[in-house]
Structures are given as structure tokens and as C-alpha cells.
Length: 184
Image (cartoon, rainbow, N blue to C red):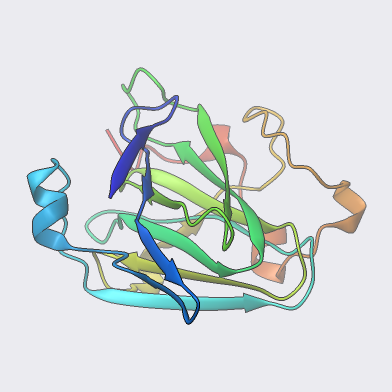
């Protein structure tokens, strides 16, 4: 397994090894002991799986507030996405900045999004599947978000705003500047 840095040091790209032959491939996508030996010690408690029929589906920017904040390990098993993590930790040197990484079944990269970050994905191809692990259970009363196209965040989504497919929930998220200080 390879760990690659991003512009925000706490957000990591993880690239599992793939062993391919005529039958297909095998890959160990998570090994707690091996990752702990590499400085990433997380106990995941839940796996989530989403499928999007169309390109242009945007899910996010989501997070859970403390004490149910979640670290996520995200991967794409079919299709391709732009995966975005926004730093919500007040006092952080990277507060309000974001990392955007293309994850695809073809590049086999994963993104480690720590607690204290809002997270969103935009499908870049139809028929895209995303799987991710979290280290805290879903807590609906702590389910929060930030509006996806907040100009203060400056995220360069590679799609016209009129073509984005959003849930009603994601259409009503607050602006970044209006968020309480969930993470200090």
C-alpha cells in the first residue's frame, strides 16, 4: 500500500496494490495493522455503498458534528468521481481550504478524509459506485453540510451548475461562513 500526500497534510491518498492476471485482480483495500504501522490507526465501524446512475450527481458537502464526527476512507469501484474534502477545523492552518482528487475504478486510489472535514463527490461518469468506510456510526441529529457551490470555498467543480443533480437536502445546505464552530 502506498500513501500519497495532498495539499492538506491530514488528507491522504491511499493506493492499494493490485495483483492482476488473466482471471482479473486481487487487492487488499484495507489492513488495519499495516496502516497503523504506517501511522494511520483507525477503527472503522461501518461500510457505506452508493450508486449513481448519471454523471453530474453531486453528493455533499456532508459531515457529522461532534461527538459523532467521522473519518472516511472513500474508493470508487465502478466509474469515476471528483472527491472533495473541505477543512472545517477552526484554528487549522488549512481552515476553509479544500483538496480535490479524482478517484476511479481505473486508478484504484482511495481518499482518507479525517473528521473535521466536509466531504463531497461528483460523479464524472454514469453508473458510478462509491464505497467508503467510516469510524463513527451514522447519527442523523449530527448530519450536517455546506452548500456545494459556496464561492468562499472556490471549488472548481468540472460541471455546469445547471447540470448538477442534487438532493433536496443538498440544495438547502448553509454557506461556509454561516457554519457554527463545530471543530475547534
